Image 1 (spheres, one colour):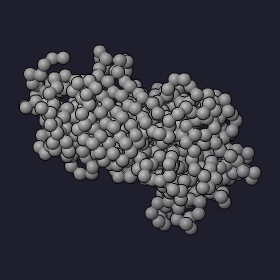
Image 2 (cartoon, rainbow, N blue to C red):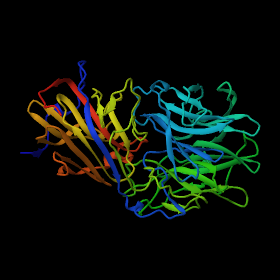
Image 3 (cartoon, helix red, strand yellow):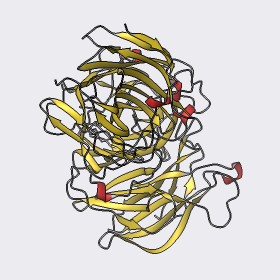
Image 4 (cartoon, rainbow, N blue to C red):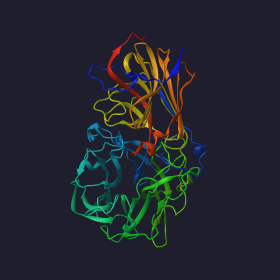
Length: 563
């Protein structure tokens, strides 16, 4: 008989594996994800679009235009492949082309925490070459990569030797290029969070910095008010002015976007008297469909000839919590009579449905990037979908696709470590979602395989099937800031595949299993889903959900029956 009880034995928990023979791969038949937000129910208006345009963990957006084509990229921190690149012709319908960082040797990921790594990339184009400037936090600093085709291949990095983060390239009409970034102020900082925006000329041919570095903005709009974290700078040239657009306030509920302008690219820059041009701070985050933390904007001229902005924001529940993390939003820009751009007037909320750029039409093919949808992978393609990501770059491949199944070679690395565990994940894009899979019972002892929901090394769940000397066990492992604990377990009578499922309902989630197709049994109801949010776990990433296999000690074969 099946039974459910707390599992207090240590044998189910992750342990450091000793060197030994490789364990047999864990085998998965399919994976399915369904998003179920009430705010995304119903049809999109024919001439409208839904915000966010990219749901889930797609923060720090940057955009560039080349003719009729638009290209957008985002931060990925310690996830690999890094920096997804999307293409659109109308700013509303997007398709992923691939990743800028898709070769393990491009960047050093080893030992990085999940919220370190690739910070705030920016994309630009000049004379047939695409440039992505970015920071590899804690692993090399600032760099630039290039490509003639945005789908790749992208070059290996050229390291840029200046302090700070958030590098951004601006190509002026005279052919000169300038690199902006957020760095420490000159001299001793006056307060915590005191930063500055710097500029220096960049030589595109030699891929190096030239000339002196200069401060454009010290502190923020009004340093007497001790503004914090001026960052994410971009320069645009319009109507004879250079506009410097920056985020200010830190990437949480006090986030905002501010604007400065100058007649010269290297300043002096004057802030607009009516800053910020975008913020949701001071608004009630507990109202239905609230958006908070807006900022880190980039501006572009749309296909309708009007200016548009992309920026990050957060959709919280209970006013604070979001497993999706920071997402990408789209709103039009208006210009004042005296020549200043504004995204939203003070006190106005970010709409979740808005009029699209003239000429935009809803594509019939689902993009799986926003709204409600079901996404399924039957592992019947030659390669992995670009939606799959992993923690850090692999030394060698531990996954294979064959005969309509995915095989993951169990690694000794646990999700709580800082290596490259056997974990293929996709972004959580809804506060209310269901993710499920079917996994074969491991044929060896010492191997756990199943479904993981991951926020960080110290905050995640792992619903796993494991074989031991007495039979087959299903356990739910939880990390909530301390040691791993198996909070529920059950003996199951299963010789082949077991279906596993997690259902998230904002602040809670439930975990279920089915030995027989469709006969679901709840293993754990009302588990805490708030540990899957940055408000509890900290850091900068959203949650992911996917497939994990782990080796614990020397895996030993059993007499398990063949498929």
